[in-house]
Image (tube, rainbow, N blue to C red; front, side):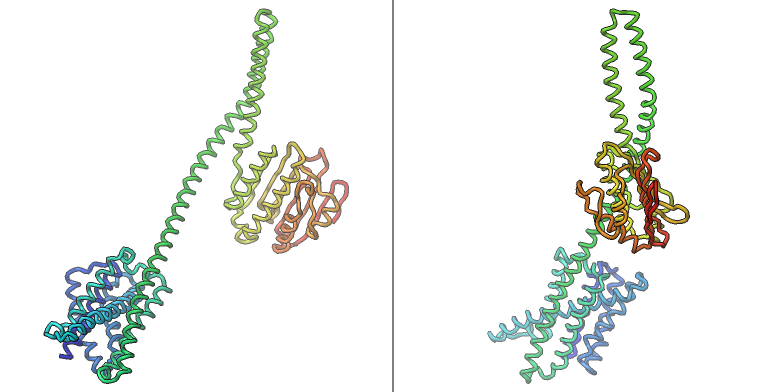
Length: 489
């Protein structure tokens, strides 16, 4: 009878473990596979019974090991990952099966105790029947477990190594508790400490089963949040692609309108001149039309002047800057272009070379951003005292070295400022809030990248620009400045 009861106990744990395994990996086995797994279950139970008689504590671990074999074969389509995933899923499934088996035994024990206290004892509550009742309760509990909305997705966390390790540890703790109970089983009926230890092991098993469920849910939540982030990232990429497509379309339209406007700017003045000549002649030949011709001339001049201003502004705003292929640098250039438009400054960009190569091999993207932003911001500030101005920004290869240069028609650098650049915070725009911090950061990057700076001040009238700052990535780490009449270094 003891042999039969042991077989029923192992069969219920193994059968339920296979059920939980398939629910966990979201697979529906075919009828042939169900039959095969039933035969596996019987074979595993016979093997574990043999181990139990030789060394009882090893029985739970042997059961798990033998259960991995058919599961590994079933998941062979996963290739190299088959063993890892099947092992993890099998261990967790067996841990849950043992844990819920313990819960079911507790429930049946309560009812058995009630029946015995009331002297009700029959074939319906003997040891074999109690095991069968436990098996039914165990199945009902685990079927209900997979009805929970959060757990319906099964073991979606199997690729999260940290979660897997925790769940395997909890499952091994469950098996260890069963091993301890198996070792103490011969003493339980007579030895009170053994009874207490077995009860504690049973409680630990139940707690570990609950912890498995909690960490299972945590793994699913982690996967859900990760998938949500990926979906948002994909949606953002799609939105960016659509916006880039729209920007490309608008740039083409701007180019077309710029060409039309350019043509109109040439055509309208000549048409205005022709109409004006005609109306002037009409005034002389027909004095009675003089007043009407004067009114038309006045309206025509007002219209053409207003239109010329709008067209010139549109041409300036519609200018499409060349791209460096570095998103952050392009964003800085577009921002500076807007600042230039607001300040009535003509801003041009020249690119000569592969800027991606530059940030990958010569200077970091972050440092390049700082250089470009600070140099152009200084140029904008240098032009604030003037009503109009020009800035030319160039980046690329010059004489075999990558170079950044900014030319502007703003305030000069005085000799005192040039001598102290990089040594202390100095600025030409102190009255307008300049701090000199930008140039200090520029010199810090020059030292880090071993690049050289040359500042040229030009004679008024000889050049459209008043000064030019050039940074050359030549590994020399030199600083030089020049004036029209004399040179200092």
